[in-house]
Image 1 (cartoon, one colour):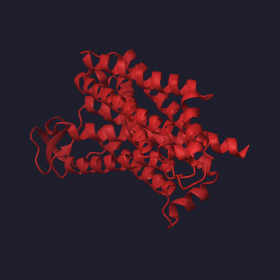
Image 2 (image 1 turned 90 degrees about the horizontal axis):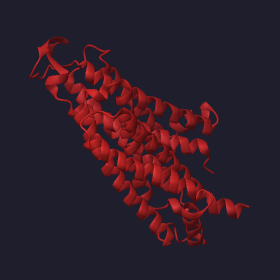
Image 3 (image 1 turned 45 degrees about the horizontal axis):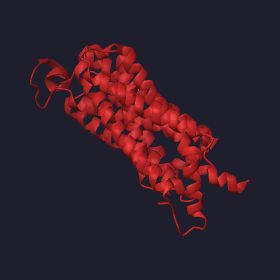
Image 4 (image 1 turned 120 degrees about the vertical axis):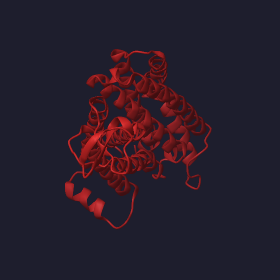
Length: 327
């Protein structure tokens, strides 16, 4: 059975990876003439159209936007690893899992989490300006690799549950899609919140406004995928129908999700606070032409709380028929 630690692991890993993906994309979109200088052997020769020997020299606004964002993402990833370690019980078991030649979803996820965190450390150091010899082209390659690793982590958090065929509610392709979109939205929320807290939002009003608009679109997609996920479950579509009583268990899980004891958390914590409210606030933030720290922080808090509530509700609803049959 999956406990609260695994729920936190799925949430923190997905959120940290989503933030890494957003930050990597923002870094790759940064104009070269603003963040790099011409230089050979790391010796800068002034800003301008830099060539093959361009060296990364992020100005203060970019350092305030990207470096604290990576720090926040790393905190989420590290806490996710701690939750995984606490759930496994002993460090040697986790080490055995990582070194085992037999691939499993947990092993792939743990490795991708480690790789994502390591690349995020390097990217954070580069954008913090703590290393003086970062080639601009090398940082671009680093960010592309980080984006790929982050996507793997985001997808894995849903595939882990989908691979547990004994739980029919999770045996659907809509679940990984829901988790990926939720992780992306939570990642954007973390980046937006960090930008408000560091003051970087005042230097990137247009960029963060567009990011809020993207988040609003992601929230719409998330709501559509959620409707498909819940609708197919209620209709009895999904799961491994070669197993006895699978359809019955699927119906029981779907009913527990939308009308069970924790339905208030699903509707209030996720649908209302995690989707409807952030969508309205994102639209408002995208239309405003000046920073609104309080509004942005409330939107970010709602997205993050909703992402955690969604994972808790999906895990609990999936295990509900199994617990009922065990009792």
